[in-house]
Amino acid sequence: MVLEKFRVDGKVALVTGGGRGIGRASALALAEAGADVVVAARRQDTLDEVCEAVTRMGRRALGVATDVCDEAQRAALIERALSAFGGVDILVNNAGGWPPTAAIALERESFEEAFRFNVIAGFELSKGLAPTLHARKGCIVNISSAMGHLVDSGFVAYGACKAALDHMTRLLAREWAPTIRVNAVAAGATLTDALGPFVDNEELMAEMCARTPLGRLGEADEIAATVLFLASPAGAWVTGKVFEIDGGTTASNWPWPMPNGL
Image (cartoon, rainbow, N blue to C red; front, side, top):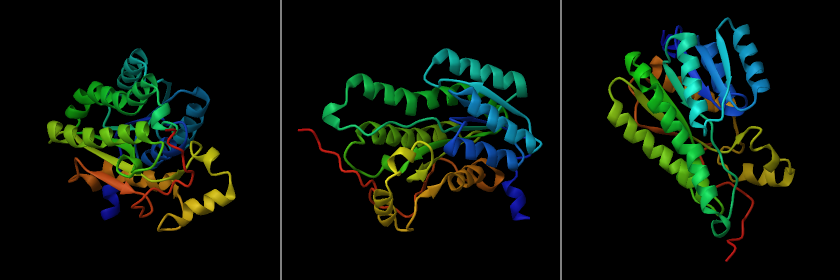
């Protein structure tokens, strides 16, 4: 009966960045396991496609075009989710990312925007949904990155943001226990649209895989499987943890050296 512990029947999940990549895979995994799903992303067309896939599984779906960095749009997302489904049990803070930039060329405004996107947006959504998550004994899964603990040139903004997200996960887990579980997934290099432009070169792609102990990059549904574990009763005794799902990497496998600009 252990497989039953991975069911989330009757639950409602809200997934940001849910139109593609890890967010899309997570939304579909949760729906396949029984959850109704609210997906948020900037592009309505990608949301419509995900909602159609969820509906075909027999679950309810709502797509809300949202820029998570915009306070009014975050509030509208929360209001629509609560209005449509009466509450939220699972929040997946997946929206995030930032392009590599040499520290010497990183403008303060860009650094601040990176934090708004990768840390503050997730915090504000977590805070806004905390009352319903508390009432329903729900959970939060933050999608972080291996670059939150690894080092490489060009990742000051992205890496610092993900490190902050990791520790925010631990702090919220402690503060909101025992009614809200909070965990994170530190994903390694995963084959998504966001990574696509960087891996079109076969030689560089091969080098990246060679630097990964398991010899390949990750798939979005492999990250989504961890999200499902953490969101389901199977992960009921887990909170405040950052799961490293990264093919065994202990050092950066990024094969594009970036001059420091000094």
